[in-house]
Image 1 (tube, rainbow, N blue to C red):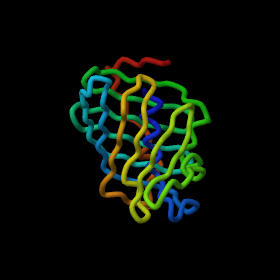
Image 2: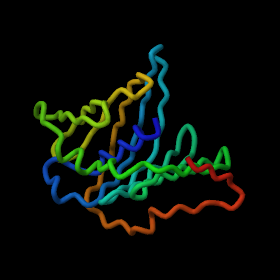
Image 3: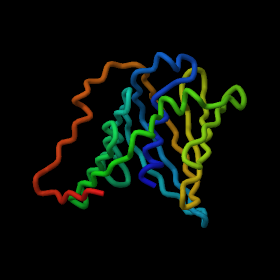
Length: 171
């Protein structure tokens, strides 16, 4: 599921000027619905920048930060006082994924990645939502608001600060 969360990085582009997208920032709401229709909602903020940088700041119901720095994910979980660091490979190029998404109709695009089908909804030149089924067959929908495209973002914003007392788990 961690890799699927990374696909939220899809939000880093708009379809109108896909070749010109360098950065993306937005608030998000992520709904996960299991096979019993139980809904878990997460709220937060994303900042992302080409080629493969992202910071997902989850605010509710738990706080955590997910940093994507080129070929690795760093997940900081303050409530657990732990950090998970894992390689994600170089095949998670979300800007390329969006660039190759196929238009279904005026407001929907289809993208396939790692045996998962993503529906990307747009309005004008903004991504409104991304939906897919994860590997546990949960329905995931990520809604974006307050999108800002091509705002200058300092690369240092993608450098995590890990408290010394946190456990570090490498996977």
